[in-house]
Amino acid sequence: QVQLVESGGGLVQPGGSLTLSCAASGNIYRIHNMGWYRQASGKERELVVYQTTRGLTNYSRPVEGRFTISRDNAHNTVNLQMNSLKPEDTAVYYCQATITPTTEALAYDYWGQGTQVTVSS
Image 1 (cartoon, helix red, strand yellow):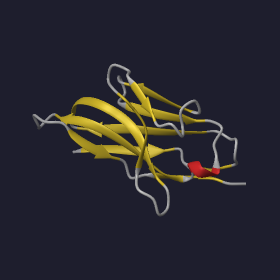
Image 2: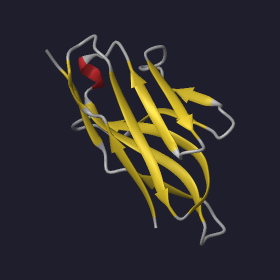
Image 3: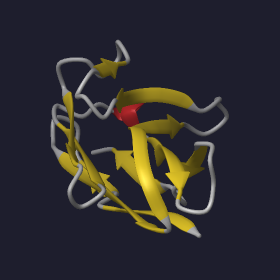
Image 4: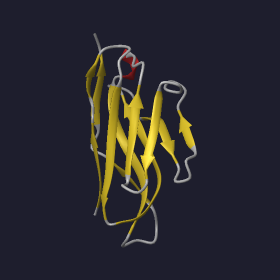
């Protein structure tokens, strides 16, 4: 069983900062990509950023320059530092990881439960 658990969401004023954390646990053989997605009310889920095991990173244009992803491969964690937050960043943020479990030969996509980020004055 593989699990992703997020933490760090909340309410923040425009221009403020927030850090999200995600920890992967369970029967993990290897973690490939890790990243963050978000889904605003009434909209489809969209990519925020992902990072490969080798550190290659892809940010979506709305967050580039404001958000920073960081991975700790030794502890199977990924963080998202969000600065200069805007009301349009309000969404449920999901951690995502592509993982090969110890019991499988293939890799699968796993998702966290989501954490609400609200940017409002």
